[in-house]
Image (cartoon, rainbow, N blue to C red; front, side, top):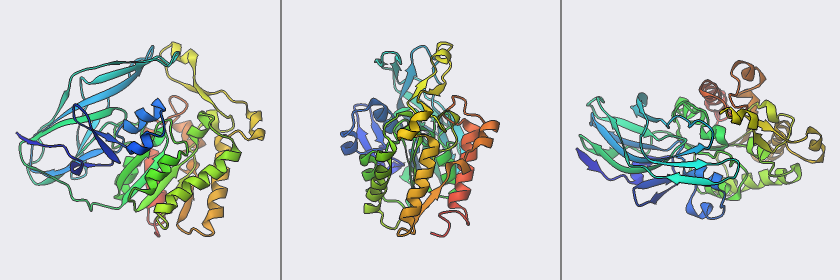
Length: 386
């Protein structure tokens, strides 16, 4: 077998890479951004490689990839299934697998304490691939921190070409991150990128789409042909700010992106339908009764009457985002707005309900991805004339 060093030239979709004692760890925020926020939720989210993939050309029929996954579990709740690795050959899904071994972090939701158990390196094997020269992509799990240790093949490997398509840079919440999706290539941003023929950089951060200035600066400094920001649900379920702060924060976020991308098509996307927070502010919380039976459900704990005092709900955010984009659009013809209800609305919830009251399942991810591709990237879509 030929051993090929795993270098950034073989990877796509990450912002930065960290050399660890065991291998190469992709990050979706640069070190200077990570240094500005000590939130463990953000640290976990940006380290989970949603949208990150190995991409290379080879005639190899057999591939071995050594990895160290880090999984997160919650005390008293059944562990989630292991993350999925998707293997694409010339753009078509060919094989899927999961990694054994690795590290596990267990979080006690009552106390917030976390404990870590270390495990061995895992070897993934992909065999029986076609023997012609081909592009191979190995998409990493969106929900497991992954250290890449070694790559072995039975033929030489070279980096894939960089000009496969326009770069789409997207930022959003756990829904964009992939939560409850079936696999890394079937979460809605990955599916939409595939349907649009685009190269995805996914800055969807679970629980962490909070209009952070360092995220805006990261987007400002990242080359992109198309940009989208999906804003709302995390601001409500963290109860982070009031309407007075929200409006200038959105303007500031867009201003920062525009400092680096003054004329790049930029799409502002409002939240999809989520009944618990449509008209009820946060903070959001786990449903402890459901948790006691081993089931994860979320609920809203705010008072709808407090909206008059400036508390945020999804309905409030949609209306304000539309107003902001209309106001700025007078001078910025490359700025667009997409109502999240066009991606997943009340009728969709009736047909494909959110299993935990917050995150779409695999079928809903596919629906959102297909609709986004049509509404944003289609011939008559919001980006179609750009």
